[in-house]
Image (cartoon, rainbow, N blue to C red; front, side, top):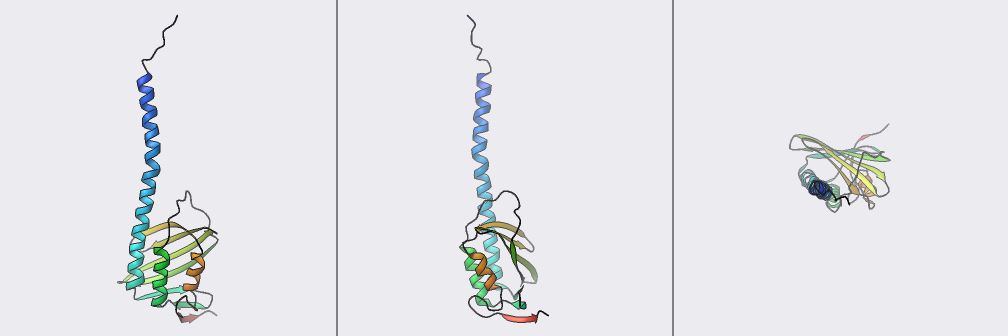
Length: 162
């Protein structure tokens, strides 16, 4: 009768254990990174919404200066956002863009609708953030904030479209 060779059993079981452990750690590290990025994004957006000299947006009516009350609403909306882990770079359906002038720095905020339940928010300035959040009708509110009508208060028309 032939004996069972167990000389490689320790190596194989150790390798399986390490691979299993790594497969559990990687998603945790990715989730922590996404959470940290979202936190840093919210801090910079707080400063922009509270200390900007000017925030403008291109709307259907023309170039609009967004009122302070609407900026407070924008921050409150984004502060309540939950991150949405996304793999890849989905195509956008529509976009709202804003430009902030804060402490002699220009920041661009882009809110892109990717689907009915997902938004990509890009904040580009001295630092750059790309975060994915759950929509929960936030896109429609952002569109209203950036429009001439505004969300909480009327915005000022700076330059009318032809």
